[in-house]
Amino acid sequence: MAKTSTAPWQPQQSKIKYGLSEAQRLYDTGGPQYYGGKTLAGFTPAERKAQRAIYGYAMGPESQALQAGATANLGNVYKLGQGLPGLGQQYAQPAQRIAQGLPGLGEQYGGKASGYATGVGDIASGMQQNISTYTDPAQAIASGLSSLGRGYADPAQAMARSAMGFGSAVGQPLSQTGYSQLTPFQSDQYQKLLSGEVDTAHLTPVIEAMGRDVQGQLDPILASLRQGTISNQPGGGTRGDLAAGTATAGLMQGMQDQAARMYADAYKGAQDRRLSAAQLGIGQQQFGMGHGLQGGQLGLGAGDLATRSAQQAGQLGLAAGGLSQQAAQQAGQLGLGAGGLETQAGRLSVDAARAGGELGLGAGNLATKSAQMGGQLGLGALDRYQGIMDQPLKMYGAAGKVGEQQRSMQQERINRAMAKHNFEQNAAQNNLNQYLSQVGSPYGSANTQSAGGMNNMANMLMMMKMFGG
Image (tube, rainbow, N blue to C red):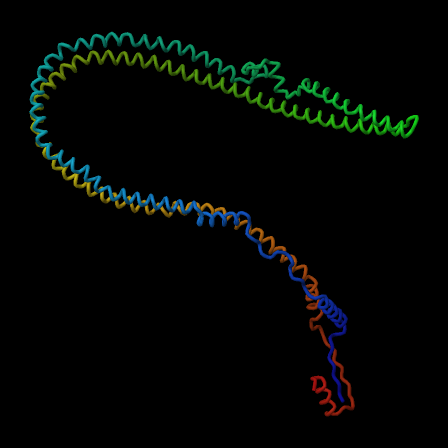
């Protein structure tokens, strides 16, 4: 029979066989492994605290106490609102009684006003005669005001010049000696503070005492080592000297370490005092400059005082001179006012009656507005309840959002770790797929045909065998 076979292009065959063998090898290894780490970020401490706080607040005694207090306050406000109409009525009723009596009161004051008008004419006639009693002392006071102002201004200006001189002196660049003069320290003391020098004089007795303590500990040790060396090696040897040297070195090292720490503490204290001393000098310099500025302000104030004293003296003299003229004018006006007072007394009775009517109407309006305010106050108290209860929950919610941000960051780290794991697990398979996609492209094929003696029946049997027949 005739036989036909189709195969890949010859240069591709070895590459494809290699790819298939790698695929079999990867399949036999069991495939990619699932990510074994944590895949879900749990609640952060901030979230758990916020959750416990919200639940504790919602179910705890604090929330119940707030709710009970708000309910009680709400009831009190409603009671106050219910009582406001009665309170308004309490004020309205006396106002109405006052309104009823105003017309008679107006007539009473009108009669008295006529009596006052009669006496005003007598007062006006005597004003002109008595005015010199006031004008003469005013003129005398005016003549002395200018010299009095200078008496206060001159000493103040002297003090101002002194303060300005001091402020100008300390405002210039100063040496360490100059700064020391602004502080409680002597020049050498201040320079020593600024230098940061470490005073080890007070450390010497302490170190000597430490040396005596070390020597007291070392002597028994050396004696014990010497005795042990003689007992084990008659005649002595170097081993005991080595042990003694080791013990001595250990104790001496401990004492040196302690002394180093003491020196470090003393050095730190000196540097701290150095900074404080520098700040003290600069602060005192700034204080002196401020003192000079205050002196300048004092000098300006003293000059202003003298100027105003002279001005006031002139004004007082002019006022005293004009007082006589005003007294005459006022006497005339007072006489005219006495005539008009009787007319106004009549008007007062009419106005009092009108005011009584208006006051009665106002009292009625007060009762109405009190009832309205009572209702509004009760509703306003109801609006406050929700805000009081929700405020702690808002704060806990804000803290919980911080925890959510932290948990999102943790979840992102987990996701990136899973992506890296999956990439590493599938790297070999992905590499093989890339390889096969390159070598398996249809670059060409090879066909082979051959003739044979099989008949159609044989071909059918072979096909049945291939398909499992």
